[in-house]
Image (cartoon, rainbow, N blue to C red; front, side, top):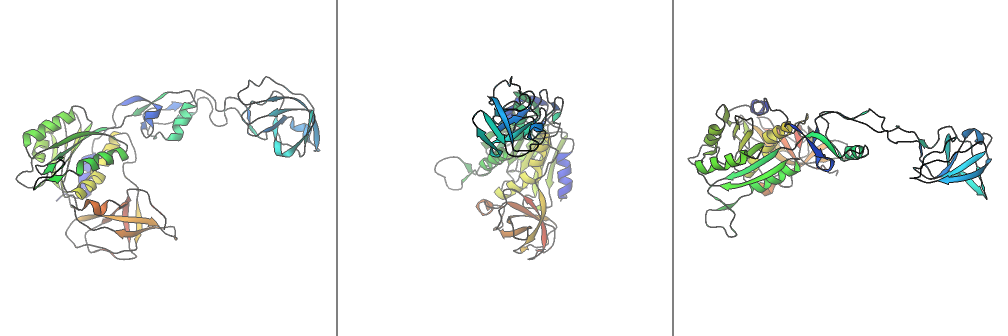
Length: 405
């Protein structure tokens, strides 16, 4: 068997981000920026009021209350051509440009109207309630740097610069192929047939992980059919994931097909983990990764998290390849037997009143028990031995939202 970390190093070695492309902002959220984006406009573009109130000269409010003559009003969206002099005030709305001559805004709550005048009931400091031009973003400021992920807020920042697109590493297109004579998509199963659960699970997992899935369907246990499907997938995809056909059975042809398509870099491994021990990985002559995962549904999920997802994130330009991993306190025992392998156990975790993460539940274990692990939100890593007792701390990879109990 090969050590888990050695297998992961083999998968990740030499993977480079996909070539940069310009994507519309709405399509770029979640992608990794490929070049520095600098501001070409100041934000805000002019001094404006942060309050509904009165623009004035702060010096006129010394010894307040002060009575100032109203000489006009300015609303958001207007050009702000008004100016004021000593002893004057201008009614101003939030977001409106500050008139020439004003150095502060007094909020409406601290004023009282008296006909064509306004009484300022307290002294106002210079600059009060004014948003300065360029306060948020100055011209030439770096808005995004290579390696950063475009967030919804970043989209707003870029839109605020009048940009319609940004240069990023695009999402990898990933083909998913299921193999096995036993698989069926027919409405009624014939004796000996089973539904294909791996393919829909992986397609949805790819979407949730920020990648572009491509459904390559399923093929039987036939080397020529498997090779044809993989060739077809590799013609349009950046990577391909298959399930089934990687163990030691008489009908396990996938690993030999991968070796044919990846003549210089193909490894058929027995990884020291449970589940997911059989794993085949290759890189085509053009550099496309091919992941051949074990066919049992839970093994497929574990293999995706340990090998596929980190590699695809490398292709997408991410610097952080792993899901968050931290220690969690066991509120339930996680028993296992020594067998020379690392066990990956689907568990439920939650934050407790002590502010720490706790393992609050486990699932029925078995590489075929997909429903049993469907509600899990973490993978606990148990090194070779007898497992973890109540109160022990174990490393967990967080897969989904974590509740507080």
